[in-house]
Amino acid sequence: DDDDDDDEEEEEEEDDDDKHRVQFSYVIDVSDEFVEMCGGSARRVRAERKKVERTKMEEKEEEKVDVNGFSRDDEFKEEKNKNKKRTVVIVGLGPAGLFCALTLARLSADTKVVILERGEPVERRGKAIGALFHRRRLSETSNLCYGEGGAGTWSDGKLTTRIGRNGEEVKDVFKTFVKFGAPPEILQMGKPHLGTDRMVKILRNARYELEKMGCEIMFDETCRTVMVEGNKAVGVTTESGKTIHAEAVVLATGHSSRALFEQLSNDGVLLEFQSFASGFRIEHPQELLNELQYGERFAKEVERGKGRIPVADYRVAHTNKEDNRGVFSFCMCPGGQIVPTSTNVHELCINGMSFSRRQSLWANSGLVTNVKLEDCAPFNDEHETKPHLSGILFQQDIERKAAVLGGGDLTVPVQTAHDFLLGVVSDEKSLPSSSYRLGIKSADLTTLYPQHLTEAIQFALKKFDKQMPGYAGKEALIHAPETRTSSPVRIVRNSESLESENTKNLFPIGEGAGYAGGIVSAAVDGMCASKKVLAKLLKVV
Image (cartoon, rainbow, N blue to C red; front, side, top):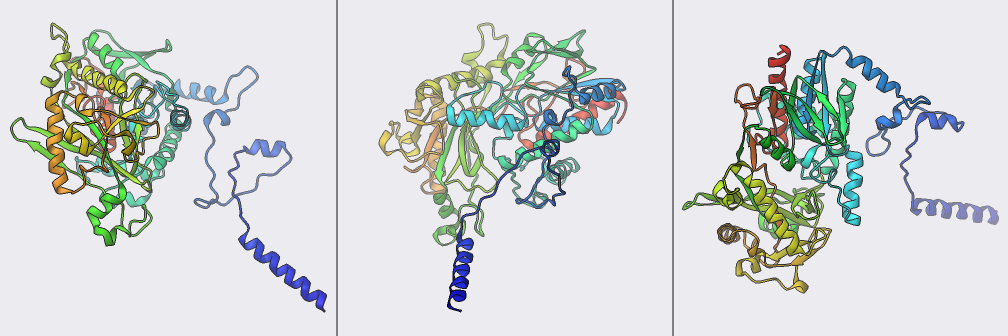
């Protein structure tokens, strides 16, 4: 009996050990065909969010390819596209291009939609960005600016908009996001926010929908020129040597498509200068902002995005009445981080991003001022034949100077807000911590911009510090530069047809063309443009 009791005690001890034993979960990525080949059987798995999830495999893995390398999927698409009556080429797969393509494919089954994207799909784009963060390996075609979803993918994922939440187009955009995986709460939230992690899933599902509807998506294809004959767009050429003829070309490029803007200018497409904002990105400890907004007692309730109270954010602005120059916060990222948005190593620029939980120790925001045509005058050529491109040259000049200030290799020059107001270089050893992962270097940021722009930011910074004590203190770290807040160029279009003013069948849309200022407004512009394309060329709407 004593032996039996001892056995029972041992079993109880083993049960207790099992309860406290570390358990592991695994992600298994195999195809059904591989399971069967190994002698296994594919059981039906009940999906359970965050525990058991099954995702659609990438197209390349799903394709059935014969011994000659010919895909049956390609054969099916080719046969299907033979029945298409007209072709529309969309350049860029950001929000504007995505929603334009979705609407075109939905409204006109006999329209062949071809999408060119210079970057990679989100899965491969994520790997390229990982290589940038961990090995400083910058891809000039797939980075935080270029790739599926555009610059907004690796950003804060804000869905706030100034064009109104009650418009039918805006509602359609929100419903579409929910359809592709966004949480339904965004339909009711006052400040809807997706975060980079959710954007990846949403974009992948949207791509599957486009492919299902017969759209052809060409990644790693940069548009070199828009072919124009008799003042009419007739197609595009690519850097890889492809020529794609089309009845309409939709330009949904982002704000960093500088080479294409220059090419359009050389080809006589009407462009004009567009005022934009430029400056810095200022970062604070998130706890400081929580205490400023909620007070010491309730700030503890935030719990880094997991508490009952959301992480604190802010919006500040000041306008100098003498020259009507505004200074304001831009794309504020609570619980976020500062990231490099350079498209080449010689031109340094940054932005902010947040994941959906906003759990970072830092909060950052753009601290920018208006840049007008007269501010860019030194960058006009001697005959002033291309003032519309002077904003691009202004941006490039600032980015190149910032790269030198940082010492190269995408290291960012910084200065505490306190020292920025005094005009002294911060002590490298006493700099506050930064969320920027590629390194920071103390520098005098007051020398980066023209003096009158620097003084405008300094004056406003003092105002903001009075509103939020500590905002311009020693814990606030200014990073440089924030230059690509919006496009410095506008491709002039007709307000009714949305066509280029002097090039028929060319439809410039979205932020890069100068007609949107965020994810939602760009998506709405893409939807509206698609209907104009069909109304003019296809007589469908």
